[in-house]
Structure formats: C-alpha cells, structure tokens
Amino acid sequence: MELADWYSDAWTDWEMRAIPIETLGRELVDNMADMAHFGPIHYSAVKSFRNTMDGPTVEEVLAAQGQ
Image (cartoon, rainbow, N blue to C red):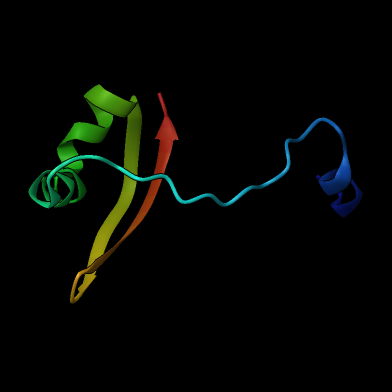
C-alpha cells in the first residue's frame, strides 16, 4: 500500500469516540481477562494478548486475525 492510498475514498476516516457502557465493572474486567472468548464470540484467532492494570485503568493489547 502506498502512502497516497491513505487518503483514498476506499478507506473510512478514523474516529475516536467515548461510548458509555452500562454494565458492572466486574463484567468489564472479566471480559478483559478472558482471552478464550475471542474465538467463539468475536471470531478472532488471537496472536498475542496482554493486559496492563494501573489503578482503575485497564489497557488491553491484542493482536488477532479474523477467522
């Protein structure tokens, strides 16, 4: 892919949004920690997976490929 392709109409624009999730914090943490659910729920083959927890913040770093 050429850098000029970056601005092509074939791609959608990147957008960051805050989306409130109405659930219990416990369910979010359970979902973040459960690597095994990515295959059957998200149809993704996990290549690498890690979580970093810093106080109330959890960061997930995931590399996966759609099945």
